[in-house]
Amino acid sequence: MGLLGALFGRRLWLTNTVSCGALLAAGDGIQQLLEFQRGVHAEEHYNWKRTGRMFAVGLSQGPPHHLWYTWLDRWLPGRSGRVVRLKILADQLVAAPFFAVTFFLGAGLLEGHTVARSLQEFQMKFPEVYLFDWAIWPPTQWINFRYVPEPYRVLYVNVVTVVWDVFLSYIKHRDQLNEDADPSCAAPDPGAAGGAAASRAGPSADIPVPKLQASGWDPSGDVTGPAVSDETRRRQRGQPS
Image (cartoon, rainbow, N blue to C red):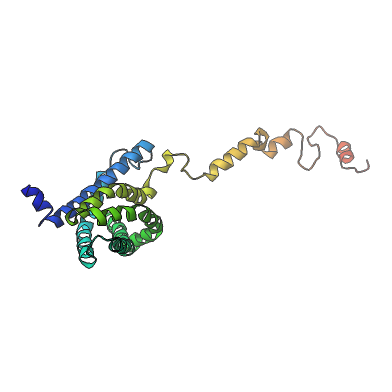
């Protein structure tokens, strides 16, 4: 009981930080297993570096999560319906965008990307992330702010976050998946389409004109060849003999 009291007492910030990192790493691990099952994982083996990056990003978000919920409880104390609604609204309008941009920025920098490129990825993917955020977090936070004791709120959020982290890992690494393994994801190949069209044209489409001319036929409509007389060619053209 002493250890538990320390973890959720004076060491609460440490518990919240480590749990953020561990659960984000767990979410990435689940997502990688799903990618292997679908046959779209970008590599042959499990990418431990990718999970490590997710763990590091989670650690970086642990202290802000801890401070945010501590401040929110002091700013809006109580568990009434009005207070809970205000907390949810503040969480969606302030915390959600902040943690989304820091997630993409941190993950992008750990992948070796520039700040500009990481922010560009955030701008591209944020609408989808924010839409799902509104679907999952308001009901989750209603339970959190209404019923969960203050010391356990970040832990409760992190447990629910496993589902959220699987989604985040998917969105973050979606453009790195091996789409060639899934025919439905592959882009059409113009060259292949051209080859198919050529094969439907029939074998005569591949026969060069000089060979046809040598056999006694000319594209202009004349019959050629040394065995045809000049008079025969004049009759074909409608010329008087």
